View: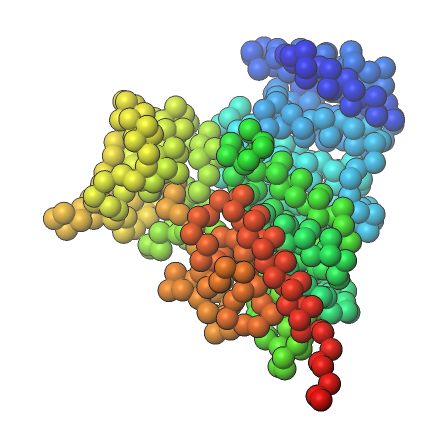
Length: 525
C-alpha cells in the first residue's frame, strides 16, 4: 500500500508513540476492505506498540478504529485515509498513542473540560484540501477527551449514506446524528461552538489588552508578512484574524511561489502562522472586525471594533482582510449553498459522481474546474456571461476536447432551482436574444472571481466602486496611520507573492509613521 518513502517517514513518526494502541477493523469482501487490511497490517508491523485485529463490529465497512489500549480514547476512519488524509492518519496514531498534540495548553484544557456526550461524524473527500483540518481537529479532541468520539467518512466509498443524509459539500460534520457545520474548522472554532461561554471570555480578554504599536487585521499572506516585519522592528504587534491563512487555505496547488516549485495552500498557511508565532506577536484568532474608528487627534489611538463586542486600539493599523468568493446574487443561490451550490471542485466534485453539473465562469478558474469535473461527473455545462471564454487558450483547447462538456457563452444565470433540500436546476437567459432556458442538474460550481472583505470599512477609508481599499505606493490609505495590503486593496494583481510584498511594504510604512508621529517636536527658537 505505502511506497518506500512513505514507509520510512511513517516508521520514524511511529517511534513517538508512547502508549499501546490497537487497530480494530471492520471489513467485508470488497477490494477496498482488502486494501485497508493490507495498510493496517503494514502499520502494525512498524511498531511494537501497535497491534491489529479484525472485529467487524462497525456497520460501515471498510472502517477501523485507532484505540488506546485499556481506555475509552479512540478515533475512527470509514475508508482508507490516504491522499490528503494521510497526515490525519499519522496524527491520529500519534495522538491516540499519547504523543502530546501541538495545541496551546489553555485550549487543550477547554477540550478536556467539555461535559456531555459528543459523537461527531465528518463526511470528507480524499481530494479535499479543506477536510484534513476539520478531521484533525476532531480527532485531536477525541484523543484529549473520552466524552468526544469522531469518525471520518470517505463520502466516495459510502455514497448511499451521502445520498440519504443529503451531503452535498465536504467537509460536512454531524453531531449526535444532527447537522453541526460545514467547511474547514479548527479546534478553536469547534470549542467555541460547544463551550457557550468561550466567546464571552475571549471578548473580555481582548478588551483588557493594552494598545498595540501596530495592529494587523487579517491573517493571510499580506497580514502574516506585515506582522513579521513589524515584530522584527521590536514594536508591540497584534494580529486579529477571522481565520489564519485566509483565502490561501482554499487554494489547491501553488506552483508559482518563487523558490518553491510546488506547495499546497493549507501547508503554506500553516508555515505562515508558525513563522508569525516565532516572534512576539499577539495572535487573536476567530476575530472578525466590524468597525474602524480613526484617531480623534493626530498621533492618537485608532480603534478596531470586533463583532463580539470587544475593541482593540493601536497607534497604527494595517488592513489585510483579503477577499472571498464572489456570489452570483440570484434567487435560490443562498438557499442552496452547500446543497448543490458550491465553490470548490476539488473538495466537492467526488460527491457529484455520475451527475450533471454546471460551472459558472469562463476564466481560468472556471475552465479548470470544468476540466477537473469532467473526469468525475456525467456531464458539465460551462456558462459564461461574456461572448467568449477568457481562459488561457491551452485550457480552452483541453476543454473543447472533452466529450461530456457543453459551453454556453453570452449566457446569464438568473435563478437556482431546487426541491427545498437540494439543487435541481438553474435558469439562464441567452443575452443574444433574451430567451430563457432551464437546465436540469444537481450541482452548480461558482467560479466568477473574488470580492474584497471591506464592507465594514465603508465610510471610514476610501474605497473604489468595487470595494477595494485605495492605497498609494507605500500602502497608505486615506486615513492617517492606517495602511493596507493584499487582495482587499487596489493592487492590480491578486497573487500570494505580491500580497506578501505589499504586507511588508505596509509594515515598513507603519513603522516609519510611528517614528515620525512619536518624534519630539523641536522647540521654537
